[in-house]
Length: 111
Picture 1: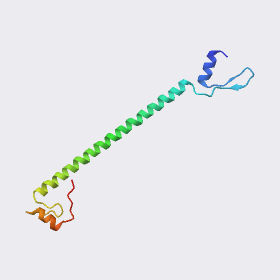
Picture 2 (picture 1 turned 45 degrees about the vertical axis):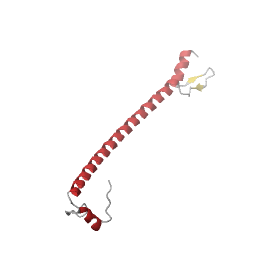
Picture 3 (picture 1 turned 120 degrees about the vertical axis):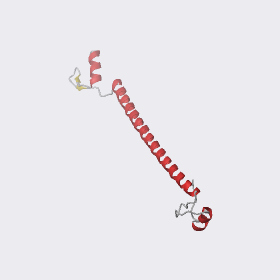
Picture 4 (picture 1 turned 120 degrees about the horizontal axis):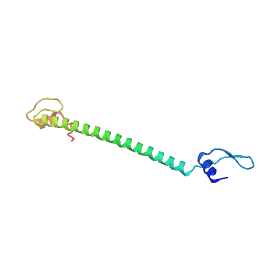
């Protein structure tokens, strides 16, 4: 079989006949096909990685917004407590520390 035919049949996997009349074809993957699959697989992996990075960025931004909101709420309560307002019952006391010990002993200050 001429080399050009052989190359063609290996590349296309078309059927051909041997001199005895038997139908045959090449089943193996060519180097070109293997490399094309590898490139496609790498492109898919890259797309997945880019999507994962974008998801992580969104999660980071959401966490930052939540943190900023919590900081604001904490500051608001801290200012109110500094001015003598009880964080539990919202009443104003001249000695807030004494009030917290006697009326709200189970209240825990966590930062």
